[in-house]
Amino acid sequence: MNLGKYIFGTREEYFDKMDDDTRKRQYLVYNLLTLMFFVLVTISFIAGLIYGLIIFNSWIISIFVGLFLGFVAFILLLLMLFLNMISNDKKLKDETMKLTDSLKKYNTEDLSSLSDVNAIRIVQEQKMKLRNGVWGTETNNFHFSDVIKTFIKVSLLLILSLVVANGLELFMFSSKINESLSIIKNSPKLAELNQIANLKATKSEHITYQESMAEWTLLMLNENPNETFKLINSYSTLQIMEVLNNCIGTTKIVLDILFTLLFLTPLIILKKSKEYAGGAFLREVSLSDISVTYYFHLLSQKKCQEIKKVIETKYNYNSFIKN
Image (cartoon, rainbow, N blue to C red):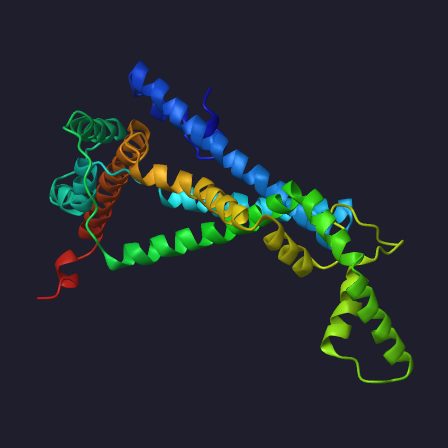
């Protein structure tokens, strides 16, 4: 089953040109890539749902937040994957680089009698020469622009992975966070400072920073009957994140690293794996692109020659040429 066609446009016509073993292997690797893509988008949606429950305490709004984050992840991951779907076959790259020179020979040939069938035959012959050639991958030459592009890609994925990681960590450790928030809420010191702040407020006296923070903390922790808590017992996201960091400590760093690696994995395997960058599917896509270029160049040259003959017949063509 070709799942890749629903996301990456891996059309069956490209796989039909491969032998059975290669086709099965390419189906497998692109199906795995598609499943990985759907998993990342799904956990992004779940993370958005969790953020919505914490910030808005409403299931309806939370669903929209989840859909928004899932959509952002879908577009960003799709963009990153497409930008890295490039064949690294050396022969194809060389042919693409000198494609203009290869097509120059048709500029001087008489193509007026060239039919579409003959044009397709010429293209297929060129395509078969490339397909039957010796394939080999190449190590990309260093260029500073590659560093900038890679930095931008990795940075965007890091931001997305950390956003998703924090959301899922809040859900995973919600019970522990609520226990810590309950301890803070029932703190005698906090209650005492809040009481002093309320007393000073009635007398219009100056309230210290600690008293003000105690008042704000209890305000965030006391449940409003009109807006009940849905997941974590606090209305302050910053307060929740601070408690999360204090609760799980280094475990959070480990989880953040794991989520980062999870999001970077598709990018890495597309760039380094021989089944993708050096695989048969991207090779066939490249061959198809080169063939289309050849075909339309032949047709365009034929049309140019026909127009030139019409001009030469009806007008003094030499008068248009500057000496």
